[in-house]
Length: 111
Image 1 (tube, helix red, strand yellow):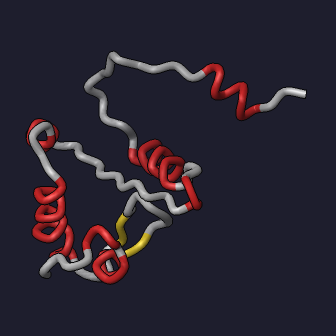
Image 2: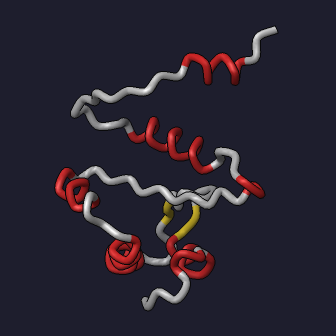
């Protein structure tokens, strides 16, 4: 009997050459969903994901820091409104208001 998971792991390949073609929204959602639910110690999924599509913003990230990221979330995401749905990178789709209240990385961030 074949183990599909092991077969997939064994056939995985790293790609170091990319096209300029954007990733389709449905593919990106599936990739993020897989990452959010990947196994972790104590099943706490401590990672965070950010999708950056702007070439200028990608270049800015090279010199970025967590303080810059938190400032960006405060200045760019928080103003979207508490009901705005987001893919937080640590669980299912949630809303900006939920992240403000419960995301430990955003605790103490002035609104």
